[in-house]
Image 1 (cartoon, rainbow over the protein chains, first blue to last red):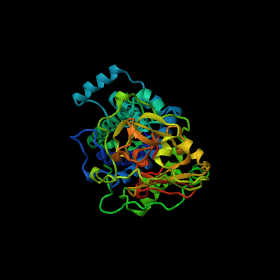
Image 2: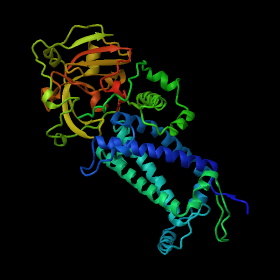
Image 3: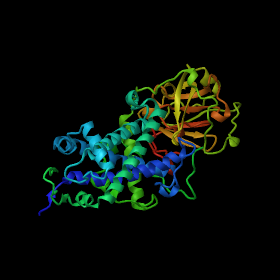
Image 4: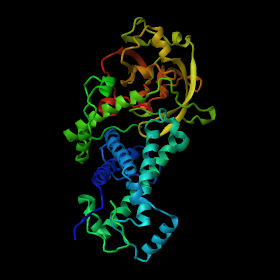
Length: 209
Length: 252
């Protein structure tokens, strides 16, 4: 059977550029964090940081920032304009999430690239929202005077810094689960490169790209 | 304390003149292609290709920060109760090495594009109209602390001595061999002051006696202490930390 398109080109380009940007942002962010840790018990081993020293890490962070945010904004605009979010992420109801979480617990939840289950939809939308929140709180950390209008959402410099850290932590948690699931269902990896997957045998599943 | 670069200086200072405005609006706006190149670079920062991209991006960020800088956008001010006590000491050396500058014989030297270059004693500076404000000091390392500084608005002083306010930079030379520089827009910002007091008392040596330039729209390292001379110039002056790789504009 001929393979069908499951991930459009711009979605794949976004995914891999975002993966590279996230790695650079997080690893340089850890080095920046180490200069003045928020928590006494937590600092990041040098081997998993980027930049060599604080000044180098700041250069990486604020260079990769542009890749991250330009890429994310293009994805959000195209995702809305092309109906990507509408087709692949919705409908999404709390009932469907609870039901699919139950199936996942019993090991009976389909995880594929065609028709996302409710938990996948929640995760992808959720991490997108968290990335946006991390970006906006990062703007307050970067320029707390110039972006003080955002303090309505994120509070002062110190609270924005804490929220920025929480956003990073949630993104890391997503990455761990995301990579673990790709390891469990490796057939989802190739379609994110080629865009195409075998048609899903189950009639009930839609083929949506 | 600010962290010193480890072992060797990983970052080479850019000697290039910072014409940030031209760079932003006409210049080499970094293309998506160059951004895409960056993603291929997982190399450490001493790799020359990666480093040249990082340097270019840092200069681009200088331009972006100047563009978003609000000349009349005020840094938030706080109440006396918010002041951090004790306020942290910070320099590129330890507190036991604080430079002691004597008031006798001290004169602020003026240089560069300034009409009246006569040096200023502290007594003369104290005779000028004074302001004070409680603002947040944000360190490049990430921590912050609220303090109260009082003194002469730098913009008022620059106009008084006939400085060329169309010039690009103002450079500050300090008694502790530190130096840093500001863009003119920031130097003229109403909250940028020649600070002579901290918490309504004469500035103590550890906070920069005889004077500190207090800039609440910049990171801490752009707030020089023990200032001995200022120079108005169109030649990019850099700075102690900036020459080692910290972003030059470093606004907040």
